Amino acid sequence: METTLPPGAGRVPTADAAGHTMPLIGFGTHPMRAEQATEAVLTAFEVGYRLVDTATRYRNEAAVGNALADTDLPRSDLFVTTKMPPDQVGRERLTLEQSLTALRCDYLDLWLIHWPPGGYPGVTSWRAFVRARDEGLVRAIGVSNYSVALIDALHEETGVYPAVNQVQWGPADHDPGFAEAMRERGVVLSAHSPLRSTDLDHPVLVDIAGRHGCSVRDIVLAWNLHHQVAVTVKSAHRDRMERNLSAVDITLSPQDVAVIDGLSAL
Image 1 (cartoon, one colour):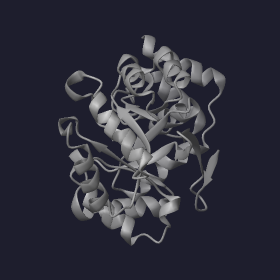
Image 2 (tube, helix red, strand yellow):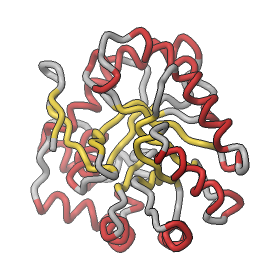
Image 3 (cartoon, helix red, strand yellow):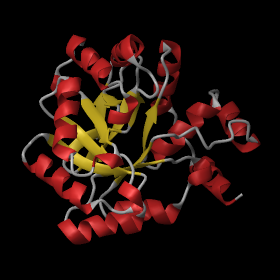
């Protein structure tokens, strides 16, 4: 599956998130606030992004909502993700209603538990998430920063796996076993910080970027997309937004991918 973007923006691959089409590259809004966040989201839509990622804790849902209201794009073309803080256990419905109001949306495309509550699975919250999905307030539900064991605990108690698990993920974090465990459970792996743990001066990455005529940042994003890992990229600058999105047009060779995979073992 793929989503067609405006001319020059490339073509964004997508994943199946519990039956809903999820772009594999999206626009992250942390730590932008107020007018800066609104303008950045509108610019991201112009550039070609269709997934926008926010969270209750980012304190910018209302600003993102202003962009959603101001854009000429139909709501059905957009994919809106937000996250519930782990300290809102027992207040899930209220938190969701507040997010929907701030975002000026009738529904969310994806709602995540931002962190495991107190390090536990958060089964009570997960049941509330399932109810919200079944009521049509949320199309897909997921988690962030969860281990395989915590995800299995949610499934054991409710029979429902998360559609998405958003974690820190990059070449240094690459764990084939973890990635395979997500695939086996039908969970889309999503990287919220694809560049944070990456040594952008690593000679291996610099060499590959040089051969492809692009930046190391582009190579890291392309590597994630090759593995069908969703990425959320952040920038308030249009030129950087465009460069990040251009990663969808980079095709890495099997040798490139294998070498980058091996960086996690170093």
